[in-house]
Length: 163
Length: 176
Figure (cartoon, chains in turn orange, green):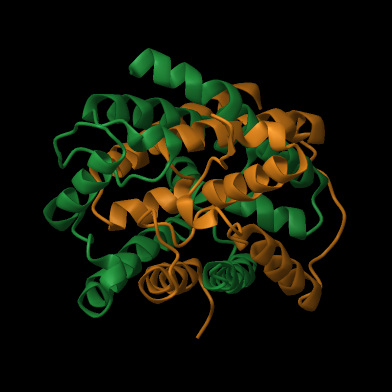
């Protein structure tokens, strides 16, 4: 069977339900896979341990993030980087490159990353977790998914105009 | 100390990264391709993800107590009402409220969450399409050796700290 996006999405969606059911990746619910939230947990955990003043609130060390990541953060980000790196190496697709178009130059991407993280956390998850929350029948996430689509349309209009 | 969640999540991340790199999975890219050139290869991944997760939750909520809140507005309200009461928040369970979990989603008012979802969703779609892919795709591209995506990850990590230091207090003051 050829590995298409649909097959990959189905496998990962099923496993995301599985880790919540049997591997204690809870609370919060529907937290099996998320890029922004797990990155946030990792960054906050590291920041709070390097600079304890960052995590101090009312005299005790509190780490903002999902309660499951309080003692050891979830390591999904590390897993994705390792997995994608191995997949790229094995299939000889690894090569150094940077984007040519002007709005994807490295120093510009920095600000896009910041904007994406802030909006994603404001909504309560990156697109992956929004899809997972929609499968958990959460109405706010459905509104969020529709608004992501509207945002994509706006961005496409801008790209058409400047390119 | 429970070592199970980090180990499970690093394994799931490995699988997700490997499959995502082979299939070029990207949710924002799916919406963009569908809107621009009516190409459905990537957006099928988004729908397959949602359907498979729905089926998974449906199967496992019979077998596991961890998904007892699955049809969230049917079973979950009482659980979270108890949690809110423990935190000293007076709230009526409401099916419009999101699955809780982030510092910003502890407010018991549905109105605030819809506003946040609208602002956040618009910004997320707009910035992601300019950056050239959803956050997951940027991670995969960073592992493939793209310098742009590596710098994107730095901004991504800094955004989390900025959000918790400055945006959360601001939002809590504005929306109560």
